[in-house]
Amino acid sequence: MPYSTRNCPSANTDRYDRPEYGYRATGIQLANEGSWAGWSLRNVRITNNIVEWVSQGIRYWHSRSGGDIHDTYGGLYVGFNTVNRTQFSRLRFDTPDGWWPASGSRLRQNLILNTSGNSWFSTENWGSWTVGGNWNYSNGTSSSSPGIKDTWGTYASAYELRSGAAIHGSVAPWSESDMPSTDYNCQSRGQGHFGRQGCEHQQAGAQNSEDQPELPGDAAAGHRQRSHCRQADQS
Image (cartoon, rainbow, N blue to C red):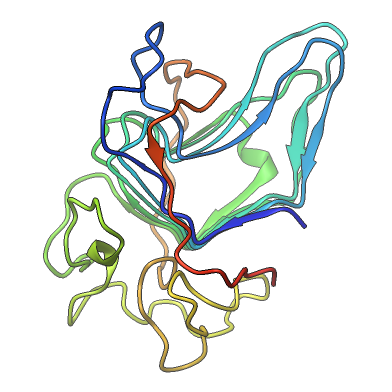
């Protein structure tokens, strides 16, 4: 099963923006692009990532080739990620060419610090997703809610929890069958290992999708992406 886990993509400069767009690259991007063949993205897991200071945190993009191209996705699991300080919607999944995405994709237990003024989750395909357990902060934060050390970010430990954080312990160990077995710090999600960074959240209602500016289909240079540890969570 393809997966992206324990990465910390962040853009610390505008130097490498594509000049025709003026946007930073996307943090984590799933893409279908071509004029003669269609591709189906299925059973991809995106977990335990910290994504910040980019154009959008996690996105499905396609080239809108039209014709006989049938690009689609299904069975995605986007869970236990932290997304902060993006220019547009934190999470955006385009409508594929040819047909709508298959059902079975899950958006679970993500921490979204949304200062962009745009919808935190943008899609026209709500029926293909199960959305729940996400903490969405679109109207500001406090020292205790969500309770991370530094909402400005720029370093991984900024997302560790303060004492008394509102999201601490909000997901019981093994309460979801498909949750990753370890967190960003490679710690087991068993009782007693409840550090943030790709862990513990609770319900915050999803907003309606809305149109967002079209972003480039390829990632620009200038990203710094750090894999926190070598151990890969393939659970």
